[in-house]
Length: 396
Image (cartoon, rainbow, N blue to C red; front, side, top):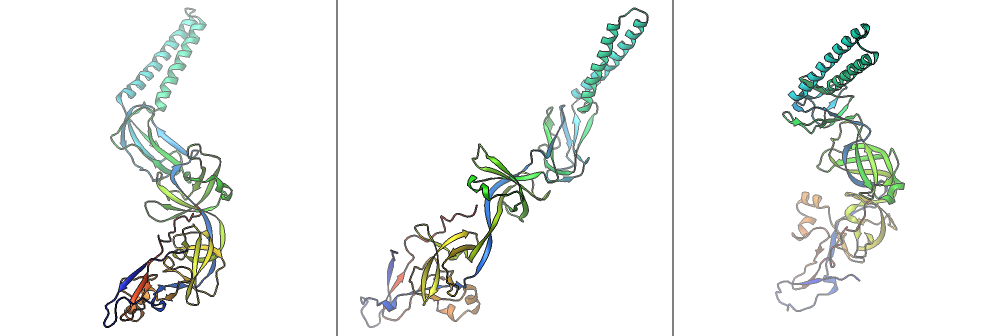
């Protein structure tokens, strides 16, 4: 049974004693705003959180296998690049250039030794085996020189270019940085190869399908992005104990590393579409809406199919001809007398009239005392604890 706290407010009495009890007719009625019930539909969604990362098979890391220093970064992270476009300009350390010069000199020495051995063979002063060894020395020297040249050791500077059209995902260095051999200087992702990976409850895996539409929202604010489910993992992530889902989106729309909230559509729900604040969760975790029947609030149990910040989709025995209580739903109980007030914005625009009759400190849903001189008024307060929306599990 709902408990109702009362506060006795003693009004100034002109001629009668202040101790007279209030009769039932002096009790207040709740001022509420209402809407007409409407049937409709809302998409069912699974909400999850993740981060934009490069796809494992769609990225290339650019590096130099020689020590040196970054000279310039023509393309920063997030830049859309064409194949061959410069990304990082790098100057090799003097020691790296010296190593290549030594390797080049070794090639010349080996070639000279081979020519000498070949002449000696014709003069029968050297054997065929010695010539074979001289040929092998030339080959080994050239391989060593070419390997250094491939690593850029043969030039004072080298330019790292995009291997394909795509987006620069990361550039962890800046001009002036000195780097070690093999250190990552930039990562380039193919167009469309950046994804947002999120974790989904394994119980919801059956609701997911590749190609399902997704709305991505930046946690730091900004415009939403539309994408789609690219992959649904078949096994649990051992670290998170959830199913990993990859979300693809247009190239360049989201930067690598951005934190995102995603809403994956899994279907459409049909029912009664009601304002979110009209749905009340009681102490037992059960959802209700209130309709006005004969001037009183009537509680109608409902099941929440989809919960959103603006409106919910519910199912239940809602009377299509009785208006739903919106503002004030948290303050009324089943059977409470109610009075429908004007929308607060409309009342404010009129300045007088119904707005002028409202107590200055009361909002819709508060109790409007039917004040009469020389009476004691009983003001009803909300039940113990507010009817919070806590406990409603969103689709996600």
